[in-house]
Length: 300
Image 1 (tube, rainbow, N blue to C red):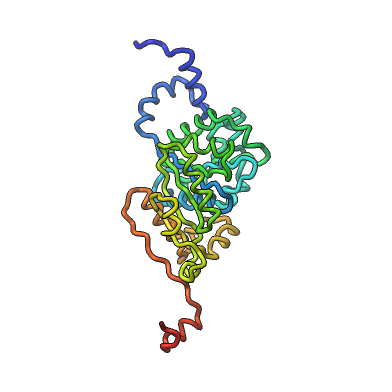
Image 2: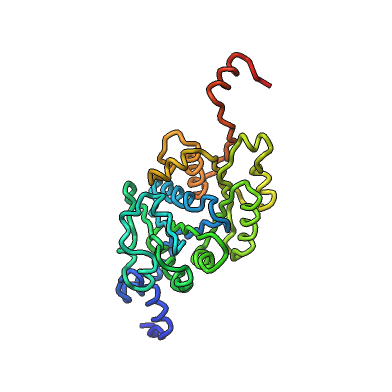
């Protein structure tokens, strides 16, 4: 027999025992878990309102549709919106802080999606403060989820304070979400500089309006990435389908014919290593414009 674990080692393992699993079971499974851990990805931006939560929900849904076991974590303690986007707000019984404070287990806090059996939400506390979450406990919680799921997607709160640091601390990868606006790009650039170097962030440019880009009234994707210089894994057009999906409490990838939904599905496949090209998006033309074009009127 090897030497007995030190007191510090036992305390460390206790911190990771968040699911009510016996300590001896954790010791036996530790080596196996280390080789089968899932990917932990934080979705961040710096600026609020650029679509982090929508992105997290749709990427999680898309991964689950491809057979992956997925946990999406709402790290925005005090606000909580990921449950609304997924339509799960009425099913929440426990939350992230309940698990950390041992008022409930992970199994009690995880909420299974209504349609997808392999997609789970870990909701944030709505009436607490971000500063109430100890960083070490947050890291331990993400590690426990990493042992259980193929993907753990962390919806990062806006800003660069305690909530941001907690969300980033438990991640091994990062996705930067920005819109083609000067303020959003500037904030994204700031966030990139604050990320740990090992995260190697990737970029999603969200809410692109091809008509405005063509007119020169919106930054192009090339304009954005000339500043940020990241690996581009997705361009998501701005459609009314996002509003419709949010109001319904359903991911936009479930709306048939949605360009936005199709863009998220392509991003999911890129995350899984597929070489999927980013297609050009063209401005939608109205019925009158299409009719005039068919008559040869208005062509350049």
